[in-house]
Image (cartoon, rainbow, N blue to C red; front, side, top):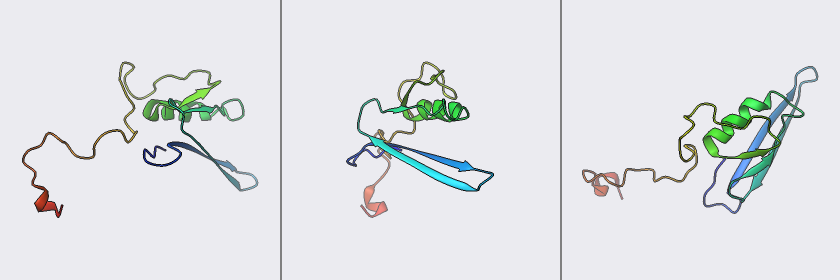
Length: 104
């Protein structure tokens, strides 16, 4: 998660489920560090490997102790992280939009 205006900018949530006992646990943690760094869960849950790589790829979160932290879906030479809220919502270069038409 990325909340640019919040007190704690970056957050991560793990949803864990014990299928035989039907137990669910939600782990939440937040940080303000740049780059955001969290401990990996791949030692306990090996299946977290791909999800942590995807989170790194789209948000830039570093996972200490991760065995293979690299881009998984985006190209290797891509700069930035596409799911961070660091970009304006609208194209600032457009001149054909009149804000009066949108109630602004």
